[in-house]
Image (cartoon, rainbow over all chains, first blue to last red; front, side, top):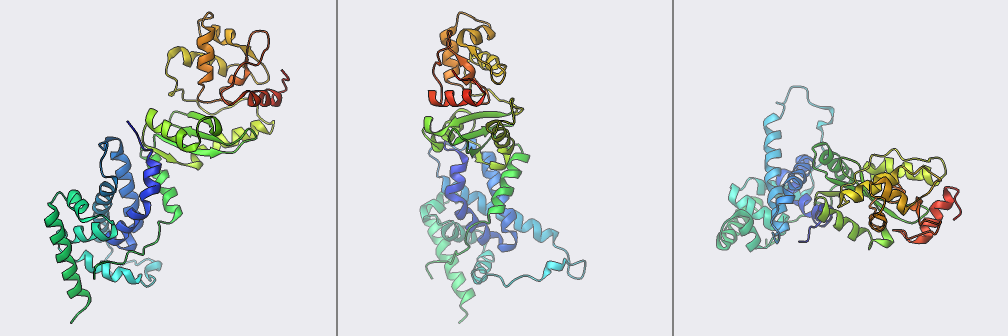
Length: 156
Length: 198
């Protein structure tokens, strides 16, 4: 049995996981999401079946953890008017984020499919495997998601 | 639109450092490793939560990648490069090579040693003081079986933690040098460093 040291998995996929957490959680929550995703992967790694698709596995974990972290912070958010931290003035968000903000507003199924496909760089059949849906359903969600984005981002 | 922009760059390096620290805090870092340079060549040091488990001469063990792969296969796949967690090992080795340290205080984990006898041989070896030597028969006796000289030699040849478990201090009866896990030249160098000119 070949056991790949986790460091090798981290080296090979850290940028991919980073893209998924930034796309899913937004730049503000990306650091936390990145940590939670890798800790979760490290915890489960010894039980990962041999021959498993490591990319699809990691991207799925990263997407889920990023959603958790993003939601968790939204719930804890301080209402405006109370002690706002002095650092509340943020830099302009990177231009890419506007588009991903629109992705985050898609229905959950489309959002996951689009994120796994483009930020996770998974192929449509891998997206299907990761989301446990048929390849046709995955293609449809990606196409529908992109269609919605077009209407959202490029108003007529 | 067939692509979405994903020019998010790479995670900041300090984020990766914090990840390793948290993995250790949460008991998820089974093996931490780092390269350690030394006057006897590059070493790869690895520790478990119990102690130093491996100190490998890279050139005699197929290089860093193979040593790390072996740790993953024999100990746990939860292996991360974590130089800060090997700082004490690096410091004690530096002091030893600078002639400022004659015994190591780092806890040792003999988890890579397969047999009870092998562990006892290495425990006996660990007790040989700086600058002194013993024999294969001597450590076999120290391990409780004076007749098992050949088995003691095998256990020393497989010592996963050379230098710190000082198998270089074990010579043949009569004073011949015997073998060494990092090559006989290194055995001579280490003995010379400790003031022995065999």
